[in-house]
Amino acid sequence: MKRKVVDEALQEAKIIGVRNILALRGDPPRDEEYRLYTKDGEEEEEVKENNDDFVWAADLVRYIRREHGDFFCIGVAAYPEGHSDESHPQEQNFEKDLQYLIEKVQAGADFLVTQFFFDVNAYTRFERTLREHESEVFREIPIIPGLLPIQNYQILKRTTKLAHCRIPPGLLEALDSIRADDEEVKRKGIDAICDIIKEIQAVKSQGPRGFHFYTLNLEKVVGSILENCNLIPFKNPAIMKATSKGMDGTTQNTAKNLSQARKPSNLPSSRRPSITSNYLTTTSNDSSTSAPNTANNAISQPINTASREATWDDYPNGRFGDARSPAFGTPVSYSPCSLPCTPAQARSLWGEPTSPSAITNLFTSHLSGKSPHQLPWSDDSSPSLSPETALIRDHLLTLTTTRNWWTIASQPAIDGLPSTDPIHGWGPAKGFVFQKPFVEFFCPANDWHDRLKPFLKSSSISPEISFYAGTSSGRFESSESSEAVHAVTWGSFLGKEIMTATMVEE
Image 1 (cartoon, helix red, strand yellow):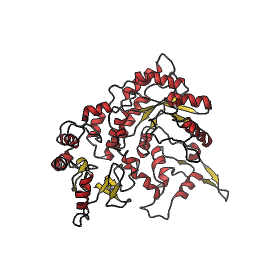
Image 2 (cartoon, rainbow, N blue to C red):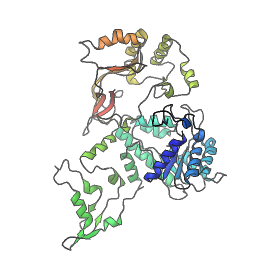
Image 3 (cartoon, rainbow, N blue to C red):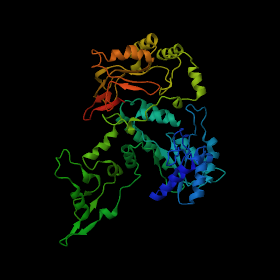
Image 4 (cartoon, rainbow, N blue to C red):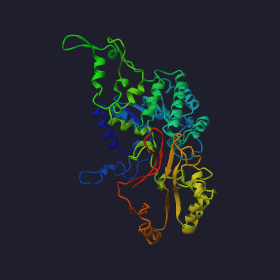
């Protein structure tokens, strides 16, 4: 990180009044990231070389303190289960990280925010170790536990894998049994996080006990947790007893009049937002009003028809729409920089194939349920294919063995199977699920131009099949417009909008 970038960010924070800074080392920047240029488009001479001032988070903390004194309140990261940069850490132990954490605190950190966790015992052991550490630097510093609300099963598995976070076996087993039903996963997740909060609250704290939520920009589950744990009591005596003088001099109930004024009486009842139940309710006694003690309602309920769109993300698989929504998770990119393991582990898994036939053998072995059980784009290293993929295994093997087309993603067609189907089912019970077939694969360029492309564009096939094709050099072509979005997995459920689990787009 170049010093000028840090200086500009801190100066902008000062201008807009931001005083709380979370100082993280972060991932090493890519070559083009944070590059600075002059007005003529030339890279600035003084920053062409890498700046080694901010190799570690402690360097950043120390610099902020030196340049800005006590203006900023600085937080730093802590890892109850240990920190690891590797995708397959051989050993994680927070005690090995303690020296780095001590250095960050001694450099001027004011509080700690932990990585999210689900193992309460790991956290309480971590906090106790810090409080009792012989250096005494952690004796009074605020330690804020980080919590990840559970939005759906796949996001949970992906994020915990990236963060090397352990899910207790009991919780994992409970979630695995309902993995296809997002609503049930949310309900179980809310209960699980609330249990964690209650266990932590039972531990004696140095000062007020706070929590940090990794929301993924999805607030409804967080609102339910706040309400269930009573973390933000909704009490405002000033509002509850508010009165004012009317124009005629009579005493009026201000809160009641406000709630009535907000009520959009010109809307049909089926579309009328229930504003008064969100914020203010009146009792039978006109001289007072009361507010419901519910953080979730105050935070989450839509206050007009248009704002109901904000609740669409309650169903992470739940609508035709913008795939950039955080509910859809982080897109997977395939590149040498995004391998799911270290280079040494990659070589142990896949060897060093030097010919197309050697790569074909890897794919064939994988599809046959043999080693390797994980390929670079796999979410996990399960020793067997998913039951759904196993149904079309022979077709995939034919593509791989007879044509040397290496398949990486696929699904069969499904037409209205029950949502409780043991192989294809997902979502709430008493629903129906649908799928369009698709296959994603690598193939030689000459196969595409000479065989596959003419076939897909033929008059007998083109009305039925869409395609997207790209090359390693960046060339791209498609049968679809750039705005086209294809739902390839969706479901219909009682009393709900169509829920979309998988979409394909440019």
